[in-house]
Amino acid sequence: MISTTTPTLEGRPIAEYLGIVTGESIVGANIFRDLFAGIRDIVGGRSGAYEKVLGDARKTALGEMEAEARARGADAVVGVDLDYEVLGSQNGMLMVSASGTAVRLAGPPRL
Image (cartoon, rainbow, N blue to C red; front, side, top):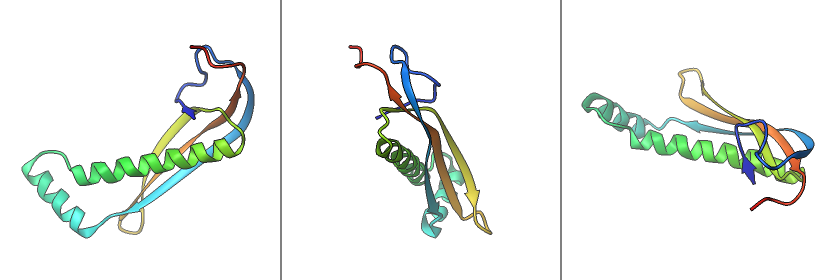
């Protein structure tokens, strides 16, 4: 499945628009991960634990979006947008959402 932030794919005309597709992933904060991330912030450096969780959440959201597109018979998703939101009464959760337009492409892929 091709997913792109651009509205078109170079050399591949869009034959049919199949509608908006979305995927979401919500992850909760972990007290131990928060503690170690706080220590890392004090001494400097990157928080690998948070980066991994964020990367996994992004992959999940994109995967769900692509699965919805595939179920509609799409070859690609164009105009992909990723959004990140903090949720919960104490901002203890992070939501990653992916959305785009599922399309069916015209003709065979060019090599």
